[in-house]
Image 1 (cartoon, rainbow, N blue to C red):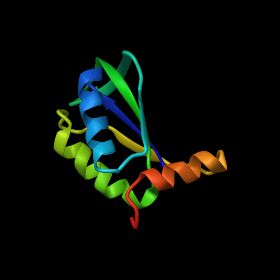
Image 2 (image 1 turned 120 degrees about the vertical axis):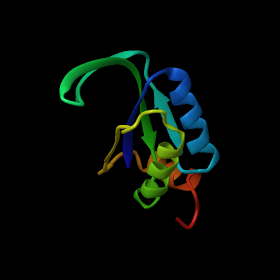
Image 3 (image 1 turned 90 degrees about the horizontal axis):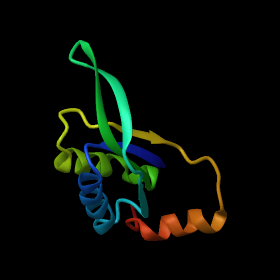
Image 4 (image 1 turned 60 degrees about the vertical axis):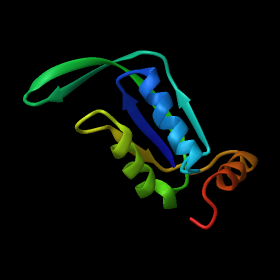
Amino acid sequence: MLVLITCPSKEVAEEIARALLKERLAACVNITGSLLSLFWWKGRIDQAEEALMLVKTRASLLEQLIAKVRELHPYEVPEVIALPITSGSEAYLAWLGEETRSGA
């Protein structure tokens, strides 16, 4: 799975990334620089400068990953969107499986 998570800063994103990696809920996390997000919030259009996390994990770990993000994320409703990885480098996908929680 590729999981997209927005955060209010790179520092918050790094804190969450380290927790996901430490618990082997992710094999790799990329964090982008600042991006501008525009969105509906509480009946009006809002905007925020955010960092985007690109998290690589297994589908079987998604619920645990979401729970950990909810625990650490400062937003009332954190964005956590999971997309299936339908194909890719066999060596990379094997590595992803090895680096995440075994037996999950």
